[in-house]
Amino acid sequence: EPEVTQTPSHQVTQMGQEVILRCVPISNHLYFYWYRQILGQKVEFLVSFYNNEISEKSEIFDDQFSVERPDGSNFTLKIRSTKLEDSAMYFCASSLQLAGVADTQYFGPGTRLTVL
Amino acid sequence: AQSVSQHNHHVILSEAASLELGCNYSYGGTVNLFWYVQYPGQHLQLLLKYFSGDPLVKGIKGFEAEFIKSKFSFNLRKPSVQWSDTAEYFCAVKHGNNRLAFGKGNQVVVIP
Image (cartoon, each protein chain N blue to C red):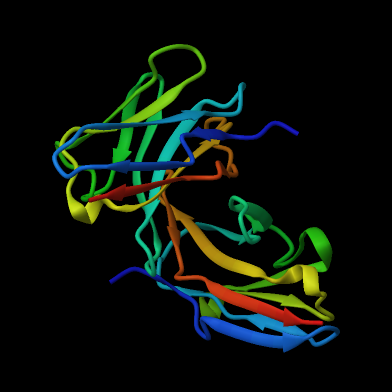
């Protein structure tokens, strides 16, 4: 069964450094997402992406964050200058999302980001 | 504020016991409802979903959930749990656009 994959599984970085988290969505899916879960808190929506542009973003997704689909398979989340409070598990998800049809988001295993 | 609520964040029960996890949401209008499960060391997996139709939905591994619109609830049930059901369970609601709103999760431990 096709799965969403994410790399790396763990990332440790110094405050102020840039990080790029990588995801490979399910191959025929059209919508891509990033969520994060700070330890002990809820899974929170960050951004959704469709047709090479952001379709929706949350208030968390400020100018420090960006997303990109650099090629036909990868979907990346970049944090330009990491802060301590960016430490979290970051989940990528994808969905088929046919227009007007309810769909299911399938999640990757997550990248644990630790900012020191 | 609009939210998804899950109570009893830590649940400990014995094998063969029945499990019910509550989920309440405060979003109006059309919603799509999901339960995801995260087994230790694994990623979020879809357990079951409700989009429309029969409010009693059956998922994998013997789980079911009932959508009660008047109560804004989507409770998860399993009549007889197994040790392998030890996991964290998340209720999620899709409303409006594409974003999912998650509850805080229920950590379920099944004692053999």
